[in-house]
Length: 273
Image 1 (cartoon, rainbow, N blue to C red):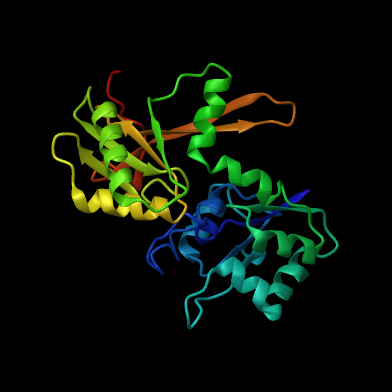
Image 2 (tube, rainbow, N blue to C red):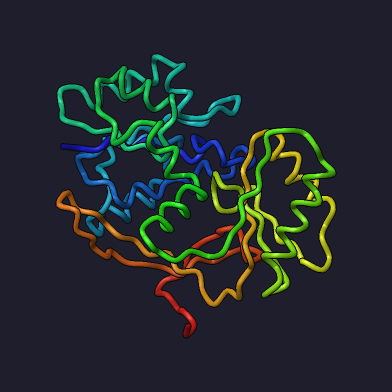
C-alpha cells in the first residue's frame, strides 16, 4: 500500500511559530516518501525534488500536490477540509488505490480528511495526543524502569498567582540545586515552544509570570535540572511490523541558543560522554 503524507507542522497544537517560517522548509517527509506515495505541500523546491529523484529517493513529481501559498495564512490541513477543490486534487491522486494516511500530528482535521477520502489513518487523535505529551512519556518510561531526567510537573486548576509563584520557585530551587539552572518546558508541543532557561539564584520574574499564566489557562510544564550539554544527537529508528527495531542513521542537531532546533550536521561529531 502507498502512503498519503500530510506532514504539516502547523497541525501540532503546541507549535506556535510565526506564520510563513516553515512553508518551504517543512518538506522533510519528501525524503522518506516512495515513488508511488502522494505528498501534499504548499509549495515545492523543484531542485530539491530533482536531486532526491537522482539518488533514488522521494515521490515522482506527478505525485506531489502543490497547494500554493494562500492569500491569507491558514493551517494547510484545515485548508483542505474547508476547500473542496483542493481536497478533490488529493482524492483524484489516491482514488482506486490502497493508501494509508500519514499525518505529522493527528488532529480532528486529519481525521475528517481520512474519513472523507475513505483512507485509513495510522492512528486516531485520542491515541496520538498522548505521544506528544512529555509528562506522559516520562511516566511511561518510569513504569517500565527506564531512567529519565529528574523532573517536577507544574500545573494548576485554579487562579492563585502568589501561591503558584512560591510553588514554582520551590521547584526551581529543588531542581536547580545541582547545576544552578533549570529548564522549564511545556509538556506539549515542539522543542522550542514555551521553553525557558532559569537561573536558580536569579529567577526571572517575567518568565515566572508567563509560565504561571499559561498554567492557569491549562498548560502543563516540566521543571528539570539543566545538565551540561555534550551533544544533541538525533537518531532515527524504524519499527518493523514484527516489532523489531532497526537503526537507520543519525545527525547532530544544531541548536540556536542551546534550545531551538535550527538545522542538522552530518556526519555526527559527538563529544565523548
